[in-house]
Length: 87
Image (cartoon, rainbow, N blue to C red; front, side):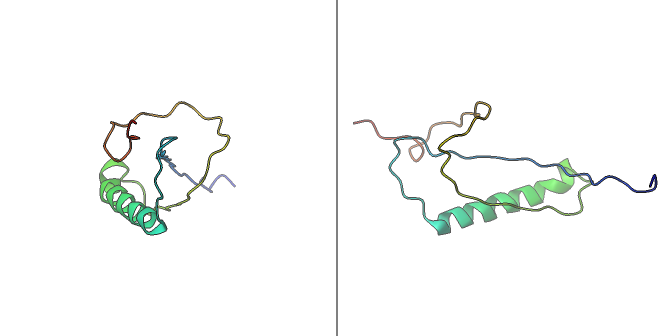
């Protein structure tokens, strides 16, 4: 048994939140395109920042988080596309 190694995995999770009150219908194709873009960017960086990795797995999901007891999110800069227009 001592000859067996433990499987080692680095999992990084990023969540991008649509602000409450922002009336936008995000289409499935847009979500798929975003997943492809983020996957490509991470794949390009992987050999530099985590050279020990031999493969990566990408999980994609879209959810409505009615209840989520998680740490505070990291705020991203406001843009015209992520900020509700004031009335």
